Structures are given as C-alpha cells and as structure tokens.
Amino acid sequence: MSKPTEPTNPSRAAPVHAAMPQFPTTAGELQVNGMALSRLADRVGQTPFYAYDRSLLRARVGELRAALPAGIELHYAMKANPMPALVGLMAGLVDGIDVASAGELKVALDSGAAPQDISFAGPGKRDSELRQALAAGVLINLESMREVDILGAAAQASGQAARVAIRVNPDFELKGSGMKMGGGPKQFGIDVEDVPQMFSRIAAAGLQFEGFHLFAGSQNLRAEAICEAQAKSYELALRLAEQAPAPVRFLNLGGGFGIPYFPGEERLALAPIADNLAALQARAGRELPQAKLVIELGRYLVGEAGLYVTRIVDRKLSRGQVYLVTDGGLNHHLSASGNFGQVVRKNYPVAIGNRMDTLASERASAVGPLCTPLDLLADRMWLPRAEVGDLVVVYQSGAYGASASPQAFLGHAAVVEVLV
Image (cartoon, rainbow, N blue to C red; front, side, top):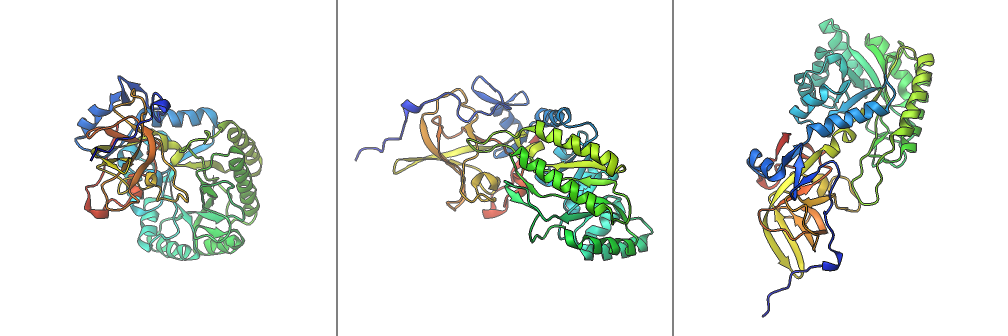
C-alpha cells in the first residue's frame, strides 16, 4: 500500500503567513521586543508560554494619549490581563485601575496604584470584599441595594468613609458590541429607573457618593457606535445628576474599544471618538464642573501586545488532513479555540514563529494535547510546512488568555507568562 501523500498547494504559496506588523521578523524568526522567539523560548525554559511586549504596551498608551483630548482619564480594566508584572507596568502608564475582585484589588495595590485611583466593580461582591475595598479606600461601584447596606454598616463600625459610585444599567446598548454589558435585563449595575431609590439609600447609609459608572459593551470596531454610546451615557448621567446626593466627581463612560482578530476586520478609528470626547468634555466643564471623565479599556490596551507560543510535539496525517499537535491548547487559550463566546468559530491569526520567511505551502490544523475535538488553535489554515519542535504562535493574545482559560482541565501544567 502506498504511503499517503501530504497535501501541498504551490499555486497558493505566499510569503509571510499571518504576519502582524507589531511583531517584526529577523532571519525568519519572530521578534518580541527585540528578542528572537527561539531564544525567548530558551529563556523561558518551557513551552507553552505567553509573552507580552512592554514596548508595545507603552506605545499603545502613548498612541491613545496623543489621540484623545488632554484631561480624559484612561483606566486599565485589569480583568483583561491581571499578570502582576504587566499590571505594575500599566499602573505607571494609566490614570487608574479597575478591578473586579479582592484578588485583583490586591494585585492593583501591590503594583503601586494609588487607592484613590482604583475602582472596584462586579455584580457579586462578597461582604468580605466590600470591607476590604472600604479599608483600602478605593472607589466602589455599587451594583445592588445589598451592597449599600453592607457598606453602610461597615463604614459606621470602622469610622471610615465609604467612597461609592453607582454602576448604572442604561436603557440602551452598545450597537455592534461583541459582548453587551448594559441595556435590557442584566446582572450588572442598577437599572436606570431604580437609581433615584439608590440615591436615597446611599444618603441614609452615610456613604460618600462620587459619580457613575456606565459600561454598555465590549469589543466594538465601529467608532460611530462607541460615540453614540458615550453620548447617551453622558446624557443619562447628566439627567441623573440632578437628583444625586452630591455633585458628580467621577463619570466612567466605559470602553468598548475593539481590536481586529479576523480577516476583513478593520482597525478602530480613534479620530471620531476623540472628537466626540472633546465635545463631551467641553459640555462637562459647564454642566458637571467637578467631574472627571474616564474611559475604561482592557483588551484595547493589552490585546495586541501579547503572543501565545506553543511547540509542535507531533505531526499527523489523517485522511489527507495535516494535524500539528502542540503542547498547549484551549486549557491555556480558550479564546483562540473559539470556546469563549464565538458563535461561529473563526481562526485567530496564527503563524509558525520560527519559519516566518518560509512560504505557506499546506493547509494544516494546529491542535492541542487535550482529549477533546474542541482543542483547536488553527483550523485548516495555510501555513509553511512545520515539523516537530517548531513554534506555533497565536497573535492578539494579550487579553483574556491565561486567566480566562481552564488551566486545570485534564491536569496539564499551567502556562507561563513573561513580560519582555
């Protein structure tokens, strides 16, 4: 019986497979902040690993600072990537950190972020977490009447002022959002029609009201949709401020800035958003003179600065289909497998990081080591011929990677993260 012939496609061969401009190549190898990928793998001492490029993180914040109006505060939503070293870097670049648990609060405080610049959101804050946030002196985004009661009692017992904002569930959505966080019934925040009642409870409990947090959605590439949501959020906050127990000093207009993951997606245009924020800022100077305007971003700040790197441990041919079996998969990178919110699975940009100057010559699937067909990093993508030992790279992996993945699944080792 003749040996199966592996598929090739010379007619479609093309240089540089899925190359992303933020990561240059030298002598056929991807570079991470000036270090060749294979050398970085040796430095890390194992695969799989995540690598975050600190020069790209600084550049993204600098790009935003240059584009947005001066005085608009930039907060990092730590849930996107809570790696302590990365948070420490971001704390020195942004104006504030937004956390969503006591664990994240500890990382933010350890990073050197000032308590007055940390805000704490989340629909299920435990009593102990509320007391920790109170003791730390951070701003607590209230999301239920219960939180008011717990904080009121804790503040009275400790003699410490409880700084609070109301997370408002608005009566509109962020159109075209990858994940809707506001509008309609939601577990997040206080329905806008219940905010007046919340004002009364805050005043009765003696809490220190500072403002509002509105977050309509995430992963949006349409500038006009983001502008509309920001404008509606401002109008809503202005209307609510008329009944507030104290002047608004903090107005978080949310984020929603997306990054391109898939073919055909275009980069978010910052200029219209900047113009819109400048107009809102001018109005706030007249209408909410004590308020600082904040945008809260996670994925947009860190997503494109990260790579997931995994090594090929086997090459298999099954009925004409090439499978590159790697030592990591959905247990480390659930998002890239398509099992973190995708309705129809699409491939993240993937490359063979040590063969960047080799022509794409075959359609191959990169799969992880887990005993499930869901463990898929690249589905029939055109790639250079890759062998055991080569490094598969998943781009756009700086957000919702290691911390958003089921690392204990099937007992494989935890992934390593490095800031380069």
